[in-house]
Amino acid sequence: MESGDPVFPVESSEPSQRGSVSSSGARALEVLVYVPGGSAVQLCVEGLCSVSVQELSRSVRQALQLPDSAQDAFALWLCSPLLELQLKPRHQPYRLSRQWQDLLYRFTDAPEDDIAQDEPCLQYRRNVFFPRAKELQLEEEGALRLLFEEARSRVLSGSYPCDPPDWQRLGGLSCRLELGPCPDQSTAAGLLSTQFPNTDPDQGDSALLREYLRTCQQLPYYGSAFFSGEIDKPAGGILPRGGRKAVSVAISLEGVYVMDVKEKFVLLGLRYHELSWDHTYPEDEDDAHILWLEFDGEEGGTPVNKLLKVYSKQAELMSGLIEFCVELGGAEGGAGVSCIYRYGRQSVMESCSSSSSGRDIKRLKPKRAASFFTRQVPTSPTSYTAVQVIESLEQG
Image 1 (tube, rainbow, N blue to C red):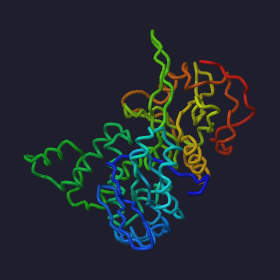
Image 2 (cartoon, rainbow, N blue to C red):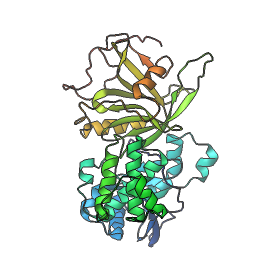
Image 3 (tube, rainbow, N blue to C red):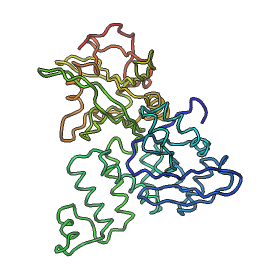
Image 4 (spheres, rainbow, N blue to C red):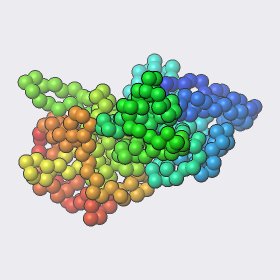
């Protein structure tokens, strides 16, 4: 991998599979590429040292009998329990696998013993940059089935927080796809069919798969790359709590979403026209890589700036992915969409307000008239307006 290439880790939602990339020479070698749902494609590859992602992806598509129209929907990922990277078409998976320990030292805080024992595998999964609108235009049931398996895994792992009606709908569709129509209410499957929304008994699998994906697409973080990080816990109560909270940062073509890893709910959701951002490197050994997210807030009816600090060795990757998504036009089409989501615990702004007295959220003196950062979506009627930077912070 060339220096400076952006790679996009995501949170693992499937069991680790090891040993898919082995030593290579000029002779043909067998390679396993894992696909959503737990199965694998076995390929015989000549010249594995120099084979590119584009060539290997073509072989996977042929083995799965996927049409060329599905080419952009999927990408090859190099994955382990410690890190997951979406590869570019020109990357060479074998060469990257030989650099795996260097990547782990750069982008994770894993102990040395874990890094020494870690080994990546190849996975064929959804492309982060594949637009949602094109997804439902796919005709091949095999492609829809792969997307469904990955989306279902995300839902079951809690990576896609849902409102109860969405859980119910997705559960019903999943049961219908797995068990088929069950009119007999004396069976367990028949009982499930009475608890979940009804579906047409004559509806084909392709239609059901599309309906499942269409429901998932209503979630703003569907199709995201997932990054690990931490934020400061809010101070409050009689005793200071301090410490940090583990979070997952989901970044897609739509926006940026910060989720509580333990409780599985959304802390903050921002479309690209609603935020500015930056990434800072540590200045000494005690410092950390930080992704800064700046957005509009309100205190007592007065507009203010708010900042969220995400501590993560993957901050550089997150910043690069945000910038790339904005360049692809991720800010378009987001106008009028609120950044507040509620999933059973607390709304985004409630979470941010409770954190504003701690270190993770800082606010500028009102009125909000400036951005700390030059990295933001270009000015438009719904854009994040940038003028002169206010120099001092009001400490919470």
